[in-house]
Amino acid sequence: MDDSFKNRALEYHSEGKPGKTSTIPSKPVETPQELAMAYTPGVAAPVMEINKERWKAYRYTNKGNLVAVISNGSSLLGLGNKGALASKPVMEGKAMLFKTYADIDAFDIEISDEEPERIVATIQALAPTFGGINLEDIKAPECFYIERRLRGLLDIPVLHDDQHGTAVTVAAALLNACKVTDKNIGDIKIVICGAGAAAISSANMLLEIGVSREQITMLDSKGVITTRRTDLDENKARFATTSEAATLSQAIEAADAFIGLSKGDLLKESDIKSMSPSPIIFALANPVPEISYGQAKLWRPDAVVATGRSDSPNQINNVLSFPYLFRGALDTLSTTINEAMKIAAAKAIAAIAQENTTKEIEEQYGQRFTFGHGYILPKPGDKRLLTQVSAAVAHAAMESGVARRSIASFSEYSHTLLKRIEYENFFAREHLRHRIGRRGNERERER
Image: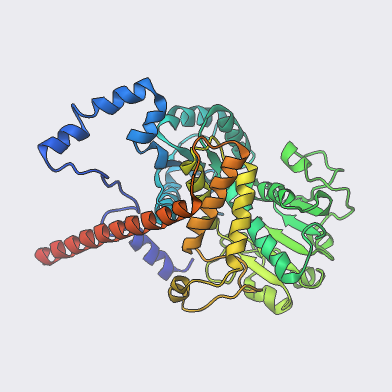
């Protein structure tokens, strides 16, 4: 990060009211009568109703539209273990994206603890407040245990986004990359470089969409994960191969696809030139990918290349999936986000990219995108993500039996979501404009 960008980012986060989120009342409280309704004595009425029937919390409070974004900062955005407090800007940003893209209210919660069972106990104690739990930037293998324990304890969706948000978006990108390159997803040979939370979950997700386990070769920091190794935990052992390959260069030879979730600048020219015709290269390490988009296209012009960066085509970004996974789950009062819901999300995301881009997206980005090598995923903010992915997730929740509320009309549901997000974004812009204007007036008076 250069100094100029760093200074702009720091100014963005500190100017005016520090941070990126705030709470805004959703009911008026300007008169004595409204105050009496909002607090005492009026608040006693919903308290007694919820005490009699717990499900009424979804009717009388914000529980059904509220997600906790929780981290201990132990595996932060490619920066490593920076601790709970340093994770707060990231968690605030995640809460901001929930609201902006899916009108989901979110609180960021930073837990200063790395002992898994204590983290589980803390989140379990907080859970009555929320309709869903989004775990974020918690290191492996602890993240697997924490998510698994919470899913067993709670009857609301729990999702570790570094695992499943990444996996869903990678799956959507691979589906479309195979379509562009005319490859059969069941036949392709895939090298996954990395064996952390995102890599393991992505590999599991690829199995769900038709990839053969025998065709996956996974590497960690010690090389290829093989059945000959004795240092594997249960998550890595599932992907142990009998291959004689030991290094990345050996594993990638004749591979159809490379999925990097490791560290920057790992791929050499000889590596990608040894891949099969029309290779698929997903270099997703952040902030420096395993190979840059430009370098990969220079050495392999026939490749479909994606990175995690926003300054190159085909950004594989979790924001394409997590807001809509939770939107569909919350709207059906689902007890979990299961494999069926994630598969439905991946296929819906992939389908959107195969359609023409909307005028709104073309105006926003200053160009038209056409499905192909340089456009295999929709752009963040495409309203079809809200309507089509949320609806697909909700439908899958109902079909798989985890929904406690049904949606009668999906066309009406999609229409309602669009109206809702348009209203909330307008309200937020007006509130921000008023606050910025007021701050400007205060500065003028100070002068």
